[in-house]
Length: 213
Image (cartoon, rainbow, N blue to C red; front, side):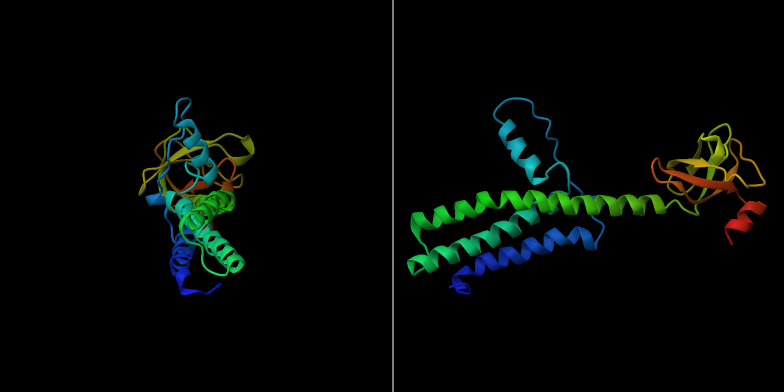
C-alpha cells in the first residue's frame, strides 16, 4: 500500500517541494526574494495574515515557504492515505479521501512554518556574510570629515567606488597615515560585525602596501 502507484502525485509533490525548499541553500535567491506585507490590523484578512505569518510568509523567501508547505503536505498526504488505506483494505475514495487530504493539509502547517523559518535564517545569515565580505579590499573615498582610529570608538564614512554603497570605517591604531574627506582609501577586513565596520587605509600608502600585498 505504501508504494502503490496511486500515490504518484504525492511522490511528485514531495520531490518538487524538497527541491524548492533546499534551493535557497544552493544558490543566492536574494535578488528574487518576495515578501508579503502582513500589516493587516483589522477585517476579514486578519486570520489569513496570521496563517501566512505562521508559515513564514513575510519573513523568508516566498519560494521557500511554498516549497516547504508542498513538501510536508505531500509527505503527510502520502502517509495518511497509506495508513487509512491499510486500515480499510483499499485506498480511500470520495468523502473519506477528501477528509484525509484535508487532514494532511492542516497538519502540514506546523512543520512547514518551522522548517521555512529555520532555513530562512540560514539563507539570511549567508546573504549577510556575502554582502559584508564583498566590500573587503575594495576601493572608495572618504565622505566624513576624518576617519578616526579604532581606539577612539568613533566611525568614519566611505563611499565605495564600484557599488556606490556607504560603509562605516575606522583607521587601524597602528596606521602611519591619516584619512580626511575625499581621500582615496583601500577598505580592508572587518573591524566589527555588529555594527558592521571595516578597517580602511590610505590608497597607495605604506599602510596599504603592508596590509594589502
